[in-house]
Image (cartoon, rainbow, N blue to C red; front, side, top):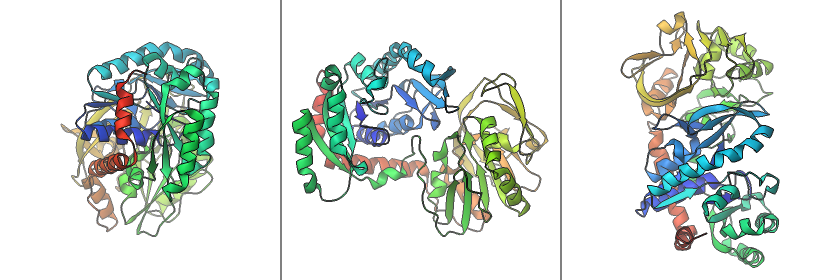
Length: 480
């Protein structure tokens, strides 16, 4: 089990890299995360949803993702509550305080999913969440030491040296953990190292002396990791000079934002996530309204930033607009939530840019899809993950056609405004090339799946060089 001294120390990437490393060595490997909190999710082959990071880790194992790889997924809907997804399906909504009490009831189900994966594989690589040193959350824990104790899974603790104070982080974790939890940690790994490794030899020795844990290696800064889909945080990049400018408003509950990675990598594209408090850039060629976990709340958030005014000006100037999933729903005339699926029962006016009305329903659509973009004929593969059904005159002009000939989405009469429910359109090279051709540019024609595959191999190769892999295997095979 890979645990960390905090969030964003690299647990997801190291788990994926180890999965690919062991798969390359011929092991039958499976990834697992007891509990994840993220609005960046993926559709599984068994018709559910799990955290995006676990889907990438499944890819690293060269297996299809299943709901058992992430049996509990929390999808924040507001600052105080989250949708609880259990084995891929919505189980309800819970406040943060109530969940701390209720989550312990999920541990038997989590252990059962883990045992199913364990039975079909040689090795399961488990990712923790946050830090085990958050001892105020230890009672009822199911994500870190609570799970490790229930399954007697040995733990490797990750320290992020790029943050600084890595010695204090690891030694401090040793100090605050209860003795039984401390005993489950068999070694530590230093992550994100840059510089002369010899300068940290004394630091590594001091961690060993103070904790008794094995030093399993120092992982360098992995440039290939930036290609992998982010789990739950958008990494902002500085603007660059490029002929095509794409603006994406950074909604408060933005979801599945990794689907824009391939567009972002195009040399002719300057793709910017516009943060709250900043206007949508007036010189953008395209504004994309992304998916969101809370469409009605994020539509209010969108208006509170004045982005509705910016978008109206963009359209008047002849700009293009694309809405994906919740963003598509926002572009319509009206959104109704009669059952309180996302919050209070009610209805709101949409942005009125597509003649479409949406009713949010409790029946969530989760499916992988293939099809073509109607205007260009470009083939794509993607997925749908949404509540709500949309209808209206604009849908007589569908944006997409899903196999075997099912219309999806809508396009305005002048062709400049479009929307659909499908995520992942631009991972396929053809739709991306068609989009760039609208603005007189040529795509790099790369398949994003192939780009991610190469990154996983590069990360795995780096871990082979940096880590004491044989010791890690011995730890995995020996009783905790």
